[in-house]
Amino acid sequence: MAAVTDRRHHFGRAQTLVVRPIFVTLRAMRKWSFGFVLALALSAPGADINIDFSNFPTNTTPAGFHGALAGGGEKGDWRIIMDESPSAFVPLLPQTGRPLILTRHAALAQLSQDPTDERFPMLIYDRETFKDFKLTTRFKIVSGRAEQMAGIVFRYQDASNFYVIRASALGHNIRFYKVVNGQRGNLLGPDMNITTNVWHTLGIQCQGNQITCLLDNQVVMPPLTDNTFTAGKIGFWTKSDAVSYFGDTTINYTPRVPMAQLLVQSMMLKYPRILELRIYTPDDQGHPQMIASNHEKEIGQPGGDAEKGAITTGTVYFGRGKGTVAVTMPLTDRNGDPVAAVRVQLKSFFGETEDTAVDRARLIVKQMQAQVVSGQDLTQ
Image 1 (cartoon, rainbow, N blue to C red):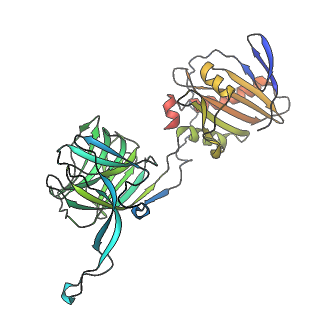
Image 2: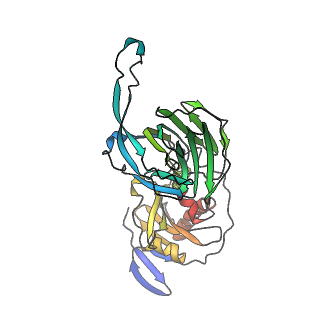
Image 3: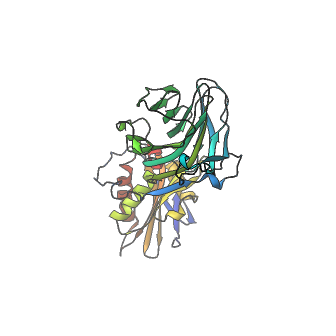
């Protein structure tokens, strides 16, 4: 960033500083609609996460997960175990008299056998939040007197809000349901024969509000439509005293791009004279932190006094460099309250004044602002 030296006027006193603020009276601004579309032009490429349980030590809970519990009873006991199963690559030919060939492979197991009825142990994957994705996992229901179930929890918000797809060996069915504020909704799905001590494949695909459920690579019910949860964590699920194993898991997903980053990308495409564009919001301590930038490696860096002033007092800051101008100003919500600071660095032109630079930056910020109802929109 080019060095900028100017003077700042603060209630009539002049001091030499890096930037100069222009105090403005904030008022609720009518939102403009400029018709630019973000998601279609700027959709992120697909990505894959492969969870290989052989990468974790046996008898431990895998790193990058945390246990959760819906309902009552004891928490789940989630560990990596070594499972012995017939080799999937050796045909079983009992008429030959050959011994059954077993293979050992790592699996995730829920081992607690607390028979509390409304008890739902879950193990939640922490390292990503998913919106549109397809998850495939192997599962084996091993035992259980009260219940014999295994499932996937997805678009998980917390232990009181999530979706579930689960298979039941005792109930001979597969069911989808949702939990909202701790209340379970209707159970949907067909009756099916789910064998115990046999590995099956469970799949779930979410695309927008469309949910598709698969068992052993076959769609098991018509696609479901639900708007309750648009994104969330994924995890493994059991019920009551069910002991169930889960095998290696693959998640193909579209990485979520926060609204703030989509706004930056859109403006960079629309205005080629923008050199740098950054958005800052306050962190938990009220300090400005960069949440979006045309240089994505910068994201997470702290802001300075200009960004803090723009957020806390609505101040507009101006600075000039060699062939550039820079403006930092507030981005407001629908009530006209500052929720973020935007720093715009532009190529300057001959004879450009402070007023024209601020006007150019304000045009860009207003277009971004038209997409924002509240500060939370920027991070979703």
